[in-house]
Image 1 (cartoon, rainbow, N blue to C red):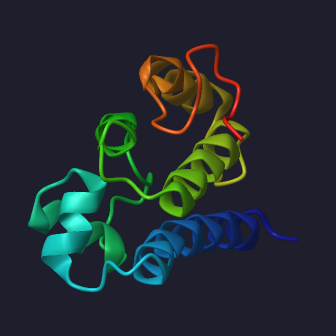
Image 2: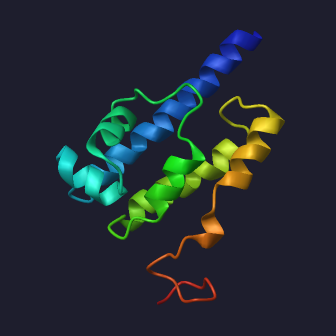
Image 3: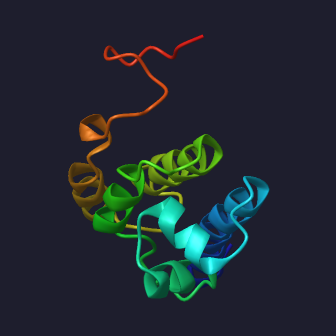
Length: 126
């Protein structure tokens, strides 16, 4: 597969994963922009740009992801989608270089974000 085609496929995969955030929000009952922005812990314009696919070519930044993960209204399904996005982006599935992957992983503070449905040691509650 030509390199340009491979890169385009990776960027398309990234866009599809980001669009899953909107689908997960809708599935949880967050249908309008105000509710979606509140659930994500972002302003309306940032939420709009993300959900409409107008995000940067590099995808969601670690800063945005950290803000989303800190949102107390973030539904579990949306949290799972964000965590999967982090995993895939850090693994290089979206065409980023090793240096970009390391920098991204270093800036995402998953360990510092309290998950409302976990015990302090990180084990899920029954």
